[in-house]
Amino acid sequence: MSNAPNNPFAAILAQTQEMAKDWVTAVNPAMANFTPQGFEKMWPTVPAEMMEAFMGKQFNPEGLDAKTRLLLTLQGLTIQGAVAEPQIRITVRHALAAGATKQEIAETIAQAAIFGGVPAMNKAMELARQAIDGTEE
Image (tube, rainbow, N blue to C red; front, side, top):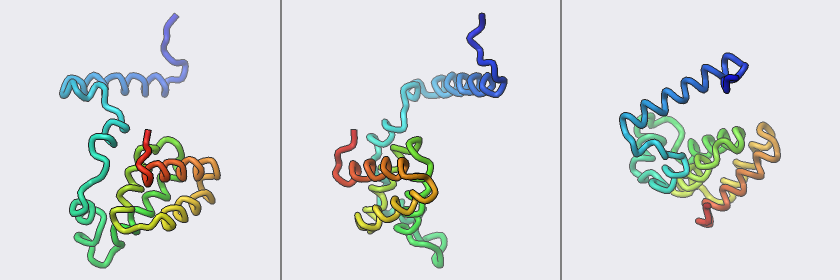
């Protein structure tokens, strides 16, 4: 018997993931063990100047400021749920660096419960607390 999935889409996805893994490790063998958590530990925050350049008003002077963009990003990540754990912690750290308060972060996450559900909100609150307290696992 074959170990291939019965679903053709699952089979294509598995094959594509294996091909991508082979390609990435051929280009850079160190990437074989890469995880989002590893990236988070390697680069916990982007320098403030770079964050302001990409998320602030440098390219769009009339647009949203970095803090607002990061709070919106945090809300979207919260709605996604547990799939975005490292991204939530990174975004909370960046939002703090951009001037967001703990209260603003908590309200942003709480507002996301309307769309993502209470379990997603609870998980994001826990991750935000870890990022704020520096107790990430």
